[in-house]
Image (tube, rainbow, N blue to C red; front, side, top):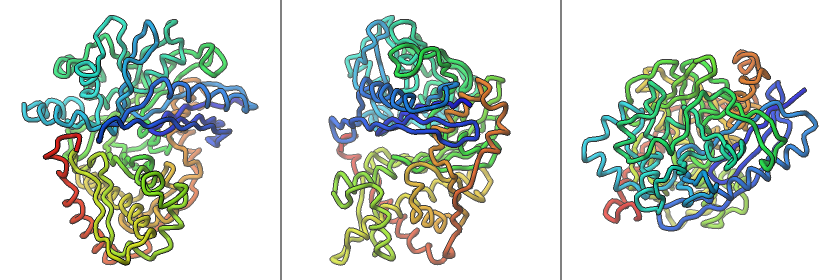
Length: 499
């Protein structure tokens, strides 16, 4: 029996995971990497450090596996941009992370100039610094990156694929539609780079990767990659689309939320691209080698699990992220406290890059437990805001929600989520669904799984959380949350994107 190895290059660390043909895990390896904050609102990564973490994790995991590796998949943090020299293999600047807000003024200018309707119609996205194009433009305009024949610009998946398949010695410069559709440069109907948008943002076509199907052979591994040579790299997807695939949300209407650094609600909406929806994103979910394609509606919440990390690293309220559950359960409610974790602005459905984090309702009786519970409550409430917008836009009320990601292990969080949504929330046995989805895409291409029916059959339920209280019990909290949101919005507008 063989396994499929997935590389999950997330926002704060790299996880390598191996999966058997029944979808169960055969092993994991993990490395964190450094977060760089050169100015308020700016977030950067060292692309070489990420590549080193990939080499270390895959080598460690491969060395422990008893089964041979049949294929390799990649999933990544999507909108983060890397520019590098294909001749030297060196990054030309720190990678600019999806959370980064430095290009908010440029987005404002493009919107004021009337370009947002074109962007919305072509890409399904909005003009927001979250996405890749203005980051790439900043690198070329202010980051010291020069346009040369050897310039490569891509998201993290492209950077890793290029290195895995040879780097300066013939590395493959490619991506696939779920990542490419997050750049503001892809026409999501034709699945090709848009000449009009390339001109608008000033990104040279020759620097961008070739767009190929999400499931299909991209290339093979080489010596120095940390893996045995000759392994097919056959599946790539952005992390949230990979989680949708890994959760077996393979039919229209099926919905999942991944609780990670941020949280991302995706609903499968079929093989036809709809018109843009206010407050939400339309994105390519995946494409398969046989030409099958799927689209999704997405609500992007920038800070959820990162707020737990802030409790740990910024306030030292907890020692480990896992401690938040016990601390939050030590009080029956938040005592009227609300945290709006708009540390890098607000995403769906508000799209306010000038919002900032806000802690309201503090009294002399407020303690660590109340703040910890307010963090968990903020995750559930932000998710509710997105789900309401998604249900209204699609015309299909969400009947249930599949939950995954690191924070999905928190029973209190998922119970709060069920209470605020008033629908069941289901957690699968395998919660590393992002890596699992990348593995499924790679394994489909190499015949490990014969069809998506086998993927559906593999999904197994761990726990379902049913609403424990009625709407009337949560309505006051939801009303005061809306007031807290309003307090946070537009806070940094007068100071610019660096406020």
